[in-house]
Image (cartoon, rainbow, N blue to C red; front, side, top):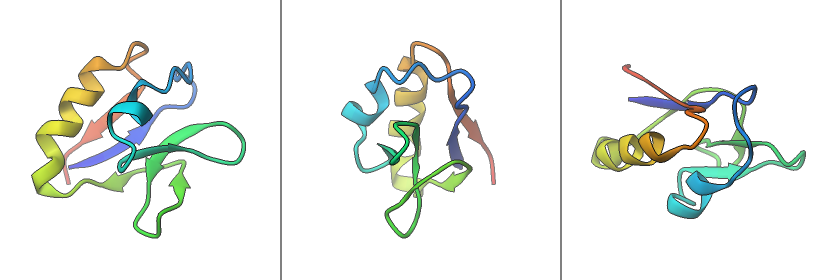
Length: 73
């Protein structure tokens, strides 16, 4: 599974960052995104390890703005 954050919808409530700080973060511009393989916050898709898929789905479901986008590989 891949995950990304639609920054046009994100209200920066930081719910995802608080629940999954190892998956989501805030970049230098204050925008939320997924954390890439190098540890940087990216504006794009990031592959989710299989063991975290269900957890990330739950976090996406809890997003108040439905800004977390999940896609199959």
